Structures are given as C-alpha cells and as structure tokens.
Amino acid sequence: MRRSTRQSFLVAGLGLALAAFTPVRARAQGGPPLITDDPDTPGPGHWEINVSAFVEKNRRERRLETPRLDINYGLGPRIQLKLELPWLRVRDTAGPTRTGAGDAVAGVKWRFAGQEGQTLAWSVYPQLEFNLDHASVAKGLVEEGRQLLLPTEVTLEMGHFEVNGEVGRNLVEHGRSGWIYGISTEAGVSRRLELLAELHGERRGSEPTELIVNVGARQKLTRRVILMLAAGKAVSGPAEERPRLLVYAGLQLNLPRQYPFKAGR
Image 1 (cartoon, rainbow, N blue to C red):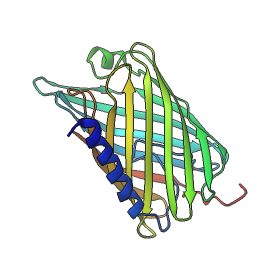
Image 2: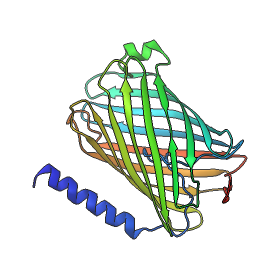
Image 3: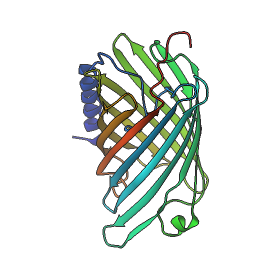
C-alpha cells in the first residue's frame, strides 16, 4: 500500500474516532498537552502556568525537556501573553549526553472573534523563538538564530461537538522556513476528565511533511490544578528526524482559578 493511501486511511480513522468521542461537557482549551493550539485565553488577570516534561525520540537521538516552564497571563478577556523556557538534555545514539538551556518562546495571542461557548472563536498568535545561551548552539542542542511563527487558530463548536484548527507560517532566520498546521478535538467523558486527540503537521522547505498523531488526557485534580498527559508519534516525515515517540506529562496551575467566560464578554 502506498504511503499516501496509508495516511488517508489513518486520517479518516482518526476522524471517526474523534467523532465517536463527541464531548458531553468540555471547556475549550487547546495547547498543552497537545501541539495544536486554539483561541482560548486564561481570562483577565488570570495565570495559566504549565510545568512539564517532554520526551522526543528518533533514530539519532533522545531529547528530554525538563523542566519546561510555560507561563501565560490574561491581559483582559481576549489577550494572552506567553513565555516558555525549557531545559534540554539530549543523548545521541552513539555519543555523550549534552545539557543546556533551550530556546525561549515569547508570544501574544489575540482572540478577535467569539469566545468559549459560542459557535465560532478566532485568534492570531505570533510567537518569537530565540536563543538564550550561545553555548547551547555550540553543543548542537538548538539551531542558531530566531524563528517567527505566525499562526491563526479557529474553534468551531456545534452542539456538543468541538473542533480546533490551526495553520501558520514559520519564518526561520538561518534555515528553511515552512508551514505548520493541526486539527484537534476534546471529549469530556466526565466533569473532571477530558480525552484529547490531534493530527499535527509541519513542513520545512522541500522536505516531506512531518505528520504527528497524538492522543492524551486532562484530569482536573482541583479547581486550580490539572494533570496533563499525551503520547504520540510521527507517521511521515524525514526518516532520520521523524519522532518515533513523543511523551508529554505535566501539571497546569490556574491562578487564582480557571476563569468562567460568559456570553457577551
């Protein structure tokens, strides 16, 4: 069976699985533990802090990001400020382990249409990735230079069914620019548990598209703390760089608590 045909069956199968898990009661909340984001923001004066560990393994190396600190602040009901800071630990299949600071990411999300609970919500989310430590570049932990991601996110909510979509251009200072895209959904199986799934793609230059399948869950522990888990792998992409395993585990802290968006805000 050709690769394109296998991918078509995979996408169709995942779509049917997502439809089967139509949410019964889910709060629109893209991003961690998934890669695909959505238009949701923390709310005015509210913090959303994700403390996590992330593992990526391919044929050449195993990459561990821990801790990965993702700090988000709601500047009014429609704007989110973001700062992400990871610490890296990389081990080659035939080499020593290298450690150092990963690239920082700073961004601003603006949801200019709709909100949670409405049929349509739409946002833009420019993010700048930049080197924190030149030593990490010298060790080969990160690429030299900056990257500017210019995505837009849309949520469609129809009854109890919700789909999040994201597409954007990634501009790379010293390398090949490309595109990212993703589609995800959530299934609220209880008041405290959500099941998640996504398809996320990334293409650089003329390379084959890297397509990742992810599944995960969010378990609400308290009004302020959520446990987040996800696992996945790439089903297409450059052979040596394609992730054979992706694992995310973390806690989300909502301070003072999750903001209750209401119609008209």
